[in-house]
Image (cartoon, rainbow, N blue to C red):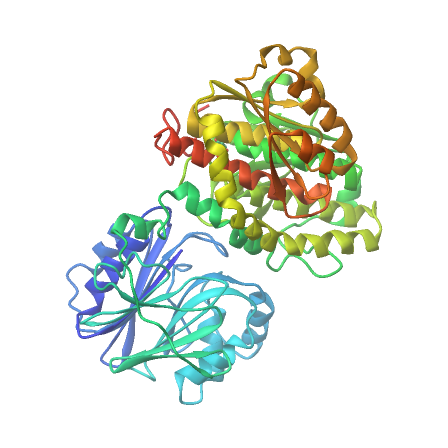
Length: 606
Ligand code: AGP
């Protein structure tokens, strides 16, 4: 979750611990530091909070002035002391801290084991020090450059070596890394927060860049070794803004993290032809034996489950039920060993969801968990786990957890589809090609943030707002309305667009903002009819659709055009402006965006 490095004149251990305190502001599960002293790399690690690491370090006198540290949010391997970073090679020559995911670690690890390397953790990161050990020929920078040609994935990493005692080497790809230039030395970190207490002068590392820091200076190159000129920035953020990477709120930060979270969740799970879910332990025969799927979750997770239902039914041709977890047990669900139960939970600790999981297990079902927290109760109790690699979600209003849960549902739906052979290989190729573009398309939405901000005043004073849509748009409407109600406290409801005329339209006046979603091309005309019914009652309609849906665009009062994608992948994109809308309305109403009243992040009581 956070990497930190220091080289300079001060005692490194207090500097590293102070840095980790700033980095690990919330949501980490283990910590560790490595320093170089009297020609040896000394490592201290702890599962749990930083205080436990400090306790271990207490009373030990260190004189080192170079070291690295890490706060971990588990991805590969449960939270434990052995999985905590820094990781070492076989002989304690190299120590590495790393944020991100090494996608091809499995193959690399197998190869390194054959070469005689001894692994001590379950992490993907541990391949890095062993690779460096393998390729080291007298210069750390050269060895690091060499291993970057072997690894695939995203990373910000820092390497400490007893072979090059006065050097830290760092590299980044699809992850963040900044360098601080202080009076007492150089600092390296995954964000500004641990650096700003020492210096405001920073270099921002670009993608595919290597930094080599010595006590004499810093030099930067690209991955091929070509020197890079860097601009020194003066950062004027206050420390709390730094915790949020300069965003005003965690919710906004997490909304903006979605392209990365979506990319990480797909990482290593797609070839051009198929979905590869190494974590699933189901044979094609077992999959063929399922006669239905049941999906269980609460709140936002339940909404992601609704999308999963449509996709699994449409593609894998399996009947699907979706339940709110707190209701699941009470309707005596018809579940048995032929049912695949999918349990969705960001935290993996929601009491209702856990109770649903246990009930389904008691009834003999096969359980797949989709969760964001490695080692969570849900992940431990399920038979199989698909992790969403969204990183810690701090804001109570869930954003990146939802879009990555949809992605995980898409992966699972495709996995079942390819095993059952219910769709052609050509069709699967097309979906996968489009799925790979989704993280970038999510990023494109941020060029229109100002447009969403301008919509907030239209909703801010409303006492009630309705979200409408058909098919998958209705599922997204439910999530959009939950976002608005929990952050802004405005009464918001979602309706299947065709259902409005059966009662709810009586509530609609010119004072009622309507958020109309129209991304399902086969349903454009039907949704347009609903919009026209609402316009006839003087309602103000804000529409979300794709370019080309002209009749819809001309019928609504305001229109937001989303980046084009296929119907089934549209929910991931459609929800992003709705999350932004909820954020800006909440802000305009002066609410506590990250901590809305009466809510907690994880509901651990039934
Ligand atoms: C949504 O913004 C909420 N934070 C809430 O509905 C949440 O999704 C629900 O409590 C389930 O949490 P979980 O995913 O951690 O199980």
